[in-house]
Image (cartoon, rainbow, N blue to C red; front, side, top):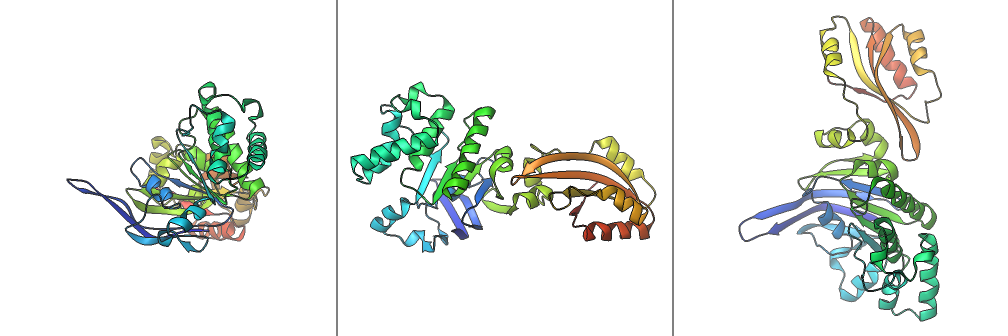
Length: 340
């Protein structure tokens, strides 16, 4: 659906150059809600703007539905962009036009007949639950309502792809949740692929099935949300995840573990729909003879599944620890070493 192949982009200033992206490669499949997260200056906005050729790479290719975006000429590019909607942090509404008129703008620019415009706008007003706001001005709306107008406008031409540029960062938590639910509805009911950039890990947690982490223009980690949340490899990723799932052991517990003078393993176990209904811990103790102490546990929802994480200390003989390791593999329980 969307492929970034070895993308590099540098911006030149009078005194220096800034590398916004360096050899970034990503693939977004049809039907994904793909989140790109990073701090300010990581290159997120530059990346997303390349999908509809608002920015072009210095090297590498952006391929959307089999088309190299950089090679599209003006007429083809205009038609290509009709398949891509975009919503923004600050809504970008026309303040002098009503909600109805704002949503109608893309249809008018595409020279659609008036009856078609009216029907489509009314359909979208119903979809985003703003039927009673059709003829009010943006200044009379809340932030969440303004973003719903922006979303309706982005959907006007029935796009295949929706780009979300920090779409919830200007909203309060409750409104953010409602907008994220609307985005999930768009993905599920309209079969629209969504690429979103954000600095909020809770956004990734709530709606995305895949995630990529950018840092200083480089891709540092990517994969399914469950895999990345379950076993983050880079400190940047770990820091983001700890904002929603705190897996840090207290220093007092770490000190105890470091001073433990018998064979032990300290691991993080992940439980999901495949194994959540099994008495894994008691079975492991019974079958292998190890002792298991739960040090920390949490339950969260990822990719519309309930996922549990437990950090445990496993003690016993070397043979028992090896048997426990094989037990968890046999029962498809992902296991990750924990640094102490």
